[in-house]
Image (tube, rainbow, N blue to C red; front, side):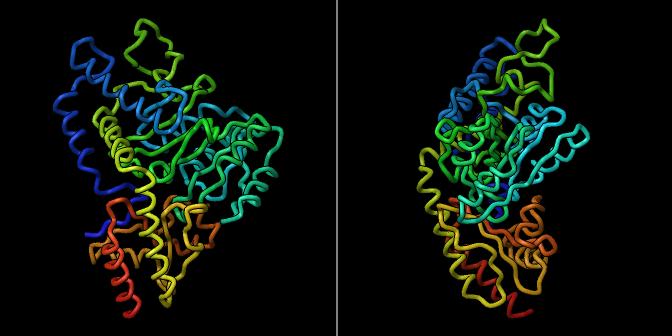
Length: 381
């Protein structure tokens, strides 16, 4: 079996993640912050340890700024729906996922509008200029993906945040495809709201996401309920992270996520990234020499891309290609990848694309098997 769908969810997980999750079910089975007994306190400490790990890993101001969510989509919704007010204007990039576009469209009924800024691959000056031109006196938030989940294009986050802060506009960065692949320091990059998926490049389990911000006071809550604190009050706590974490948390997931990030720290993000770029560039070089292969982006260099590649075979739907590969036990993702804006950008809205995303566990031999299957498919078509 060859698994190349790591942009959706990394697989396999590191052994230390599996062991941590199993151990949490056996040893940290109590509800954190809801009881005063030893197991509850130990479980709460394990949750805090993950908060602290994440804070240090992403250069946050402190562990209290780390808010656990079910996924990156939930984190993005918490910011969009917790920050925006009627008649606000938002700027997004032309590569955004539906996790951004759909909640914004749902808020149109309140008079909230958005402008789509054009991204120019390998030309950060032009990209920045398109964001600058989209700013108006009602702009209250800029949202941009750190890296496209379809084309792997990296946006110039540091320059976008610097531009936004000239106008006192906060920035939400969707790091679903960059967290764990690229170093991210929130203080250095001046990111106001960082949203990330725990189950992708961070090697945690599904059902884990992160919102990191020291501006929680600016957000209203979209979920209220039990937090284990101030239970005599009917009012939601005002302090982060309790303000945003009502209900029992996903303790096994959080402990597994902590192990995933510790795996990255132990292995070194530079080593992981170098391996993934070597894999994806090997694939790009081979595909570029094959007839009937359509490549939409330049070779993915680290300055402008994350290690991800989407392609098509001339005269063949992306779904057909993926189905053929599936029969050969090669798992990829085809279609629109929940990002129609990104496909409009590359004129693939009708065809979709076949997406390949390696992980640290992907081998060159996996890519050779993929290439062999593609050659057989093209020769038979």
